[in-house]
Image (cartoon, rainbow over all chains, first blue to last red; front, side, top):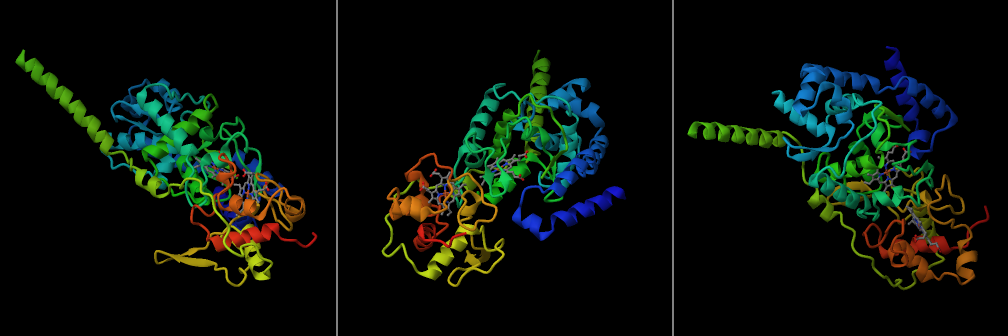
Length: 256
Length: 182
């Protein structure tokens, strides 16, 4: 009940016109709330929901078996996504791997868009909490190709304003201000973007996956939205995950 | 012997079938077409339309409005006459996009400006009257900044078709205009 109440409160606060519309960076009060929410992340309930989905499918043991790893190696293995999986014959992010897993267990896979999948993939990624990201972009030709495509996607100027991800996240602009928001360095150990998504966005009152976060940047900057799970989107996740290599996974993250 | 090779091949076949099946359960739509449609044309040099730079108050007001606002949905004050809040694209009513230049540039009267681009305060005095820049430079910069700087982080405003030449003229006229002291 307390959680629900505080959730409603956050919703009310952040939909206050001044805050949401002007997208001002955090005020003192926001920052205090941020500190408090770090102790008690509203997304924890979604992650818990994901635990139930895994249990229904046989738990960690079954997942490890599906992936061909020992149960105790599962966290380390999860810290290496997106990766090429032989029996799926493609480079997949965790959510896509879970679609294959569900299918293998005779269940209808959740859609990548669904909040159920967000919860499920957030929980599975959280199994790797405390592990360091160990993606290997040179593991095989498939990963090399995905990394290369991801870099291209990152640098591709497009859309109605001719912007690319690089326009706002390149080393020479990060730390500067776009309106009142600091442009984040996606590889910065303080940001460690890939290690902290799925994350709860305080300004939206919801949890989002990394690919959904990409889509928000695309929408804001008027780039056409690339669909979740597309090879281009997975490649972008590969590229950005590599930026945060060696950083500790901490799911769910908490963002402005 | 035959039996062995038979079981072997069924084994192989069935593992192949699994691989194919697993893949088919995974959503992986291809985005190539979306990207093609979203492509940015190569850098383009422009010449200014006739009577582009103006002292017309309303034109400058419109330029100012486009400079300081993101789009017709987010803008809090009504736009000046001649500038729509919403437009129709393919039969659909959508917010008119503006320049949102203030996201990157400080200028007279800016609220919450960014600092990715240079500060444009006193642009007339320091850049135009001093002879460092001319109107055409500013027009080209706003229309397609890549011509002057291939690696620019600035938005491309005319080559993308987001604005008309007239609108670029209005924004340019605002940037180079004499502004109220603030």
